Image (tube, rainbow, N blue to C red; front, top):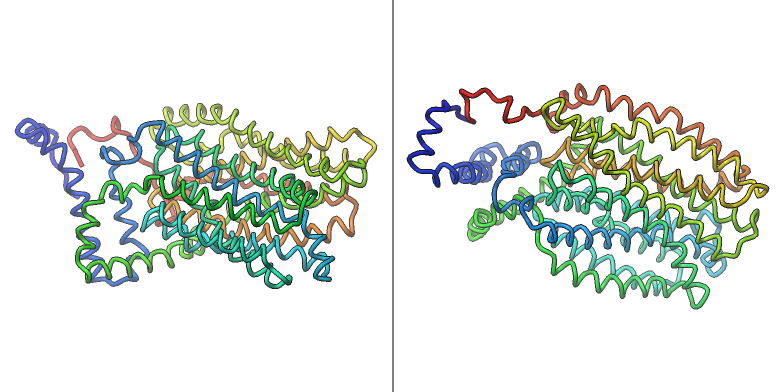
Length: 520
């Protein structure tokens, strides 16, 4: 990277203003060409996973007029609405199956733990899928990863609808979860593609809202189906809805900045069969290596993934456990007990309403430091994180059947506010800390999240079977207390941790802070 004096830069601009404006973009495309055909070729594919395509993505200029940042607001929100709808669709499958577990036990003569494997293996699929689909979308584009993944998701809805034994159901559930995970891992990357640091807060809150909304409405939807027909129609319904969403996905534009900005460059490279083959091999190597590398070498991602695994797993413990509480202790109908899940929908909506406060605090922090700090994404969380253990204790000691049912329902709503807001903070933090490989970083983040959640599905069965609901929830409250400290550690020491990382973004000086005698 060369440095020239301010006088030289002014002279160039005076002689040829258009050339001065076009030079940065040309330089970035030249850098991409060198990386793909020069330096990387000499060092081998191994270097690619640690720097090749990563460096190409870093070379993307956010000021380029072709960057999705500069799209019309209506186009950005259309993309956000579409992919959040896709997320709701996939997520409701993870909780909708809860109402079918008793049916599985009866028709296939299995234990409750065995029946729960249909749900837990779907979640395990959600964990494994992003390790490939997330990085793949970082290098080949988002759109067609969505399309083909959802096609296969729909295919395995048919397989589950026609299942004749538990093993077939479990295998189909895992594969469907694998391909459906693109709506959980890649949506955050798509939103980060089109919204910059200053405007991403509200759109990303809709991403978190979609995950909670899907989990909240899944059980009432499946209950309404099983009351009027067989559980198999839940999967036929998923097939029909999925088919419509696939058509809409095909109509969506590609959002990956490197493709929008470098479309002509990459197209010319692919005109050569040999060059195209090398590029595909390198992209595949990157996709397979990057998420695993981040998971193993980035302590920030690993810790946040473990933390969010507890939060997300707790959601399933709550959703799987509260049904019997409201059914047995409060004598509600099956549909009435399922409708109590909607408090998570309300809680996630509250998160959208309070996100502007967090955005304001982030802007204030950016103004005071001179650059955007990922740690500032946790400012409001320093307070709201305490709602997590408080709501668990609140639910534990008001769900005994002697206190009005509205008290534990409100406690669950407060829990969902803390859960959804913390998830939002973590996704924003990772997206800003690893901007060049956001899809891979979020994939590495979601891996421990869904693995822990899948395990807690089975643990929840044991807890609520062998413990009272009061002490089962209280135990979770006690366990959550030490986890509060992680938010404070990241806020106060996150900069030092990121400075150790080779992939995390380092603090950037603003234009006003750049020395006037140097133009990069």
